[in-house]
Length: 222
Image 1 (cartoon, rainbow, N blue to C red):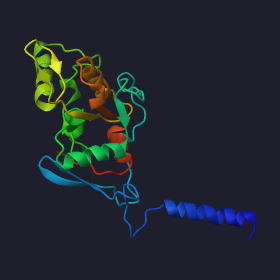
Image 2 (cartoon, one colour):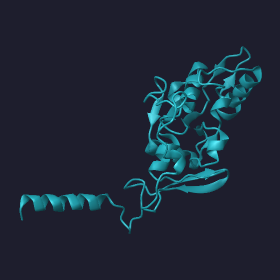
Image 3 (cartoon, rainbow, N blue to C red):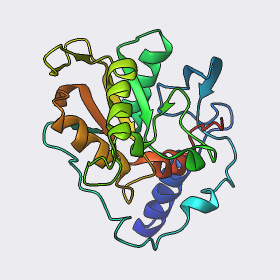
Image 4 (spheres, rainbow, N blue to C red):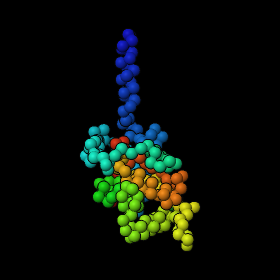
């Protein structure tokens, strides 16, 4: 057998190895089949799709989005805030599903986007409830009061009588939005750090819903 034939056989074998095995299904990783979570009080299994002809939802097929506001985000949203991928996010979701109340996965998008599908186990807190704009400013006292409510009641921070926030019992937050072209969760992280939220308690899923959908992971609608 000549060298070209050997190379062709090796290439075909490598290609075949990359295809999902019918008997095995379509795992998330070789050692991870699925992750169980609760979403709106209902059990949901996060897994990869089993349709080899599946493709991205039309809303995420668009590549040309105006900047600003839809600018490519940096790899590091805020110094000290860890940027994570799908497997790390799944690990946080698994811990939430097992009853860890010290973690909150936050979908920072507005409800109209969430209605198209979100990550199971996440909680929707629209970015404009934490920032009224991407500069992290509030236009009215009412908006600032709403943010205080979120810090205390959703995130577990404490406001002292002197008006100082403390975060000893605050939750670890994992924020995401639409993807690397979406500035919403980036802006939220910047605002939270300005208010003193510890960077070690903040995580950022930079890929967002576009990357989640691109690898065929389960999404749910409200």
